[in-house]
Length: 564
Image (cartoon, rainbow, N blue to C red; front, side):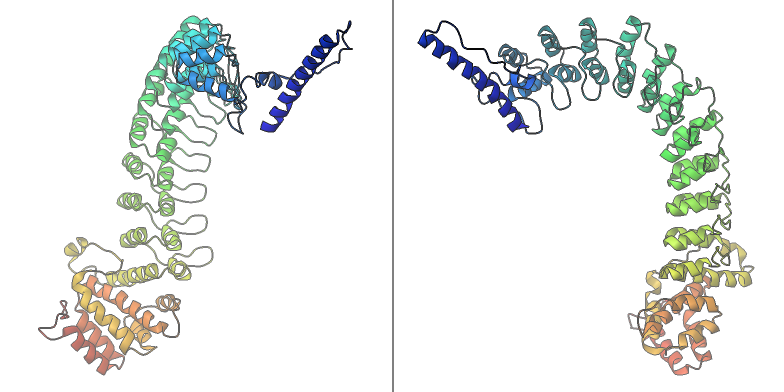
C-alpha cells in the first residue's frame, strides 16, 4: 500500500512539473500560441492527499496497516486526548478533518467516544461530517451514547445528527445508552424525540430493556419500564429481559422485571426458564427470589433437565442446596435417564452429592446406558465422590448394557484405588449384614470411608503387611488368604488385572492385605491375631510366627504395633 500511494503521488506531481517546464519553455521562445493541451487523468482522492509531499516529504503513512498519514494520525490522537491547540494547528495546515482510519473512523468518532466535548465542537466547526459511519455502522452519536456522554450527545443532535440512526447490527441510540446504564441520555432522547420507539429491536430482536437487564442496570430497567417499555418481547433465542438478567445473576434487575413479566415460567428456545439459568450460572439468591415468586422448581428444558440437573451439571452447590431445600425432585430423570446424581459425577461435585445423599436420593437408579452413579465414578476415577456413594450403601451388583459392574469398569480402566475401594465396600457390606445388630447405637455414630488407610497409628502394621506381601508370601498364597477371608472370585480377578511384571503377585498380595486390614479396623478386631490365624489356616505356620514377632516387636522397638 505504501509503495502504491507513493507511485500515484509522484505520477501526479510529475505531471504538474512537466506542465510547468513546458510553459516556461514557451515563454522563453516567445511562442505566440501554446502547444496542444494534453488530456490528463483527474488525480484520485489518495493522490490529492499527496499533493503536499513537496512541502513535507516526512508525512508518510502512519503504519503499513493504516490508511492515515502521520499528520492525520496526529489529528486523531489529538482529538482523542482533547488537545485543542494541536487540532487547530493541524487543521490550519490543511489536514483532512474527515480522514478515516482502517476502521473508517474519523477524528469526530474518537472525540465523541472519549466524551471530549470541546474537541467535538472544534471539529464540527471545521466541517466534520456528523453522521459518518465506521465499518461497524457506528456514527459519532451512537459512540457518544455507547460510552455514556450526554453532553456530546446533545451537542451532536444540535449539529444535525440523526437520532433515528442505527448500526449494522440494528443497535439504535436507546440500545447504546441502555447497555451503559445511561438514564440521562435515555431521558433526553425520549423527551425530545417522541416518535422513536423504545421497543425497537436490533437484528437479534433484542430491545433496550434486554440490554439494560443483561448488564444489570436496575435503575435503567425501571426507567424504561416507567416510560412504557415492554418486558414481554423475546429475542431470536426466545429470551425475555428476565432471562437476560438472570443469566448474569443481576438480582436487582430481576426485581424490577419480574412483576412486569407475563409468565415467570416462560421458556426460551432451549426450553429454559429463568430458574434454569440461575442454576446454570450459580446464582443462589436469584434462585431463591424466583422460587418465592412461584417459579416452577421442576420445570424441564428441551433436554428434559430440571433446574437441579443444571445445578448438578455445573457443580453449583449453593444453588443445589436452595433447590433441594425448596423441594426439588432429587430423583428426577432427564431425557438421557440421568438423575442429578449422575450429572454431579461428571462435574465431580462432591458437595452436591452429599446434599443428594442427605435428601435420600436413590443412587441405584440407572440411566439410558444402564449406568449407576457409581459406574460413572468408576469410569472417571473420581475417588472422593465414589467414597461418598459407597459409604451411603449402594447395590454393587448392578450391570450396565455391556454386563459390567462398577468393579469391572474400575478394573478395566486400571483405576487401582477405586478397585480396592469397591472391594472394601463389598467386603464391608457382607460383614455389616452379619454384624449390624451388634452395638447398633455406637455403630451408627461411626464414620465410614473406603479410602486408603493413612493414620499414623496404623503405620507399623501397614509396614508389616508390605513386608509379608513382598518378602514372605509365595505367588499363589495371597489368593489362598483371599479365599479364607471370603473374598469373591470377582474381587480376585479385579485385583489381578493390574500387571506390573512377573512379580505382580507381590503388589496383588499387598493390595489384598490392605483391603483386609481396612475391614479389620472397621470391625475393631485385633489384626495381629486375625492375620496369625489366617496364615496358619493356609499352612504358613512359620510365616505366621515370623509376622507375629514382627508385628509385636520388642518393648523398646520404635516399630512396636500399637494395635496389639
